[in-house]
Image (cartoon, rainbow, N blue to C red; front, top):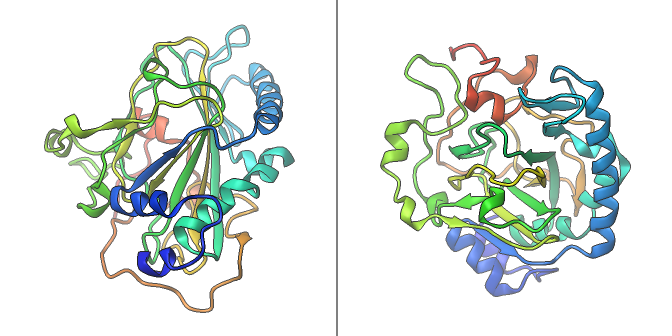
Length: 299
């Protein structure tokens, strides 16, 4: 569906002004949308997984751990596929944020993936400027990511940072000059960005951030030691179909969370960069941007 077609549909959660803001700017932040009861449930299960990670010494199919991780001081960078790890996360995916997705991609919504990212003060936990769609190209640019702040998130916590309007700009090459996947913009491309216009989405616990798959975004390093948790769920319109394997595939991949399945694919004529072959596995953007376990060069 086109933005005009989506906006002609009745809204479920967002106001019409919020929906228009998203299409104009490529992002939106809605404060305190998530009920306190949900936050309590999510904190309980997240604390349990953080405790479980103490027994892990290397990243695996569930945990992506930072180099400084230890049993005494767990430093979990990412809980992979939380939707598949615990029913609470999957139930949350199907709650109000699925309605938010429907307000922005149309009434027929497919689930793509989820992840729970943490930020710890030790080391450099910066997420470099990047765009998401190059990780998982689709027939159109409806994919979006909805992040939920589980704790109050200020500038010192490493909030999501957005370049407004960049979703209407170019897609950047996220390979380096040697053909290795970096998962981020090059220094040359970054130097051409007007970073003065960057918006840092600080917000209280229970707030959500939403950004389009073409939107240039990242996050600054955390200056707080308590590991800011951000639960992210990605959705697509049901008429968006992937060209390549999902780097974060889960048993819920393409599960319909709203509406019905599409019989026709919607094709956006704009081209998209193709990533490496993820069928052999993928760790995280943290590993890619730091050069850990780099995938083979393209081609």
